[in-house]
Length: 98
Image (cartoon, rainbow, N blue to C red; front, side):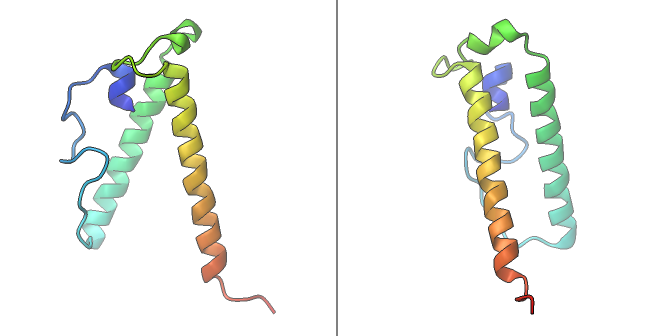
C-alpha cells in the first residue's frame, strides 16, 4: 500500500516477495528484526497518509486502480480484522476462568 500512496518502484519492500514471502521458523533475533521491520513499515505508512491533503483522498493511486481514500480505508479494515483474530486466539488459549 505504501508503494501505491508514494509511487515507489517495484521491489521497494525490504524483503523479497509480493503479497506473501516465505518466513522460515525464526530465531529470537530474526523475530525481533521482523517486528522492527513491521514497526518501520507501519510508521512510513502513517507518515505517507499524514502527508496527504484532504483533496488527495479522491486522487487515484499510483496504479490508478483505486482512490487513495479506498486504499487507506481498506488497510484500516484489514488491520481491524487481524486485530479481532488476535483477540479471539488470545481468548481461546487463555485457561478457563473458574
